[in-house]
Length: 384
Image (cartoon, rainbow, N blue to C red):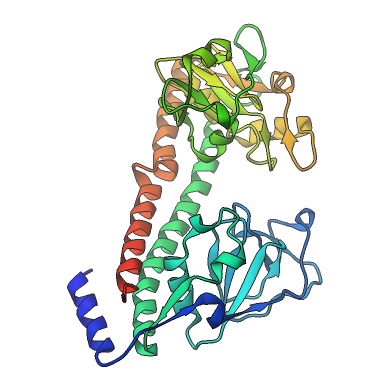
């Protein structure tokens, strides 16, 4: 896109006009949701989406006879999350910390873009409404607002198309991965993961975020397995001192590091293969699996429905879900010849890069589009 054409058009539309700055709290009103739904009522299917402020914006669906926030144009802001979302469909509120904002202007989408651009999250670590409502919002003439919305919408639509494509590819990838690792009893030997002839699980040791150092010995904290790592890694996000590492439990090259504590059953036991040259410290609430199989083959098995089906009966806990390492040792894995394991890995590596890599494939393309969108949003909303 041509930056000069954008700015020339903006200048022409603004000619002889003024831009007024107002606080967000002065241009919106708060809408109270008629009903809220508890997390244990969230479903994967249903007629009405549930909006929450957790990791997912749409946290689930419900068919319960609850009165939704009716179809309209709203901005949803989460007190304890980074969510600033534009909503134009009926929904049920799923958390007390959401603020549902209805604008007093004719262009809610413009206010959403401006709020998203100017709100400084670092002003308040809890990100409460008390700080958010002080956000200054530029209000140019309505034709300028409409042109800015048109341009930014084109970026978000492209990102949405890429995201939909990524979702479809992930489903295809999951199907193909399960297909490649679907061995019937008798086709290959199945053994318990804890069978002494193939491997053993070792629990991680006490490691908290306060133990992190700027550099030193690499470490993997269980929470980072969910948020930072993919199927395998050869560098760590965090480090501990050499003195701390001497007392820690260390995973070596080829070991699988597994998060044994999590918030939901589906992601629980997410695993990353450590492929670095040096040993790494592993935190508690995680364990590592040392074995004589092809490392990435084991990691891909941990992603299959066969693994999840065997895992589910061993899950304990209510709000925090856990699986004991001793229970994981009972899960059976198919063991084809090593060459076959490597062949499966080579195929799945290509799918994994397409659907999960932030340096290539669709996630990389989406990240580039999001950065481009943020650049143009900032440029178009600079009126000072």
